[in-house]
Length: 204
Image (cartoon, rainbow, N blue to C red; front, top):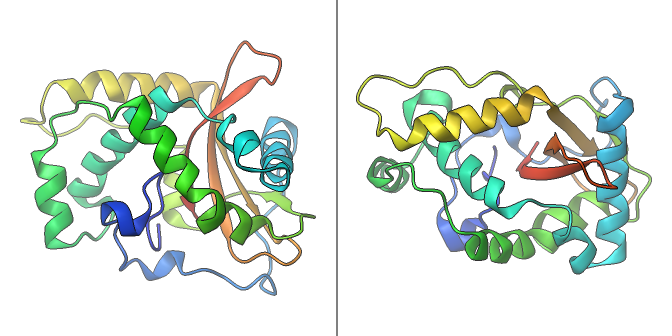
């Protein structure tokens, strides 16, 4: 994403910052096509959680899944999905497919409450739409096999991601009153009263 905000605050984790496709878009620009069903519920719940406060927002996530998705997406970024800095190339190359910890992801998700959450939601009245960016749209696509020589641990992460996306999706929340830009919310269905968990978010 633009200042690539996947559950890692740029200042804390050196998120990529050169992707012009995800520059924060003014809410005066036309929105992508609307979505309904579970995607619309996910966006509405996210809006309510942001307006309710940090605890409600953090409660939307499955942090174990977030830790897997982040490491997996780093590998796809490394293979050309996103332009990376030299530092990011070095860091992502050094990863072996070990997921980030639940504790780390809970902390980083909390860091995004204001940086992404309140920035996007503003005063509410948000729209649930399809993702705007190419990167956001790819988040919902099947995760294809990784190149030969990729550390073996990534295959389990890829399998999990495809299982999650087979019963989930990506919805963009944006167009909010007093807010700026949008977020791609990646979700998977769960057998819980809410019916889903968020497994990552991206600036969109």
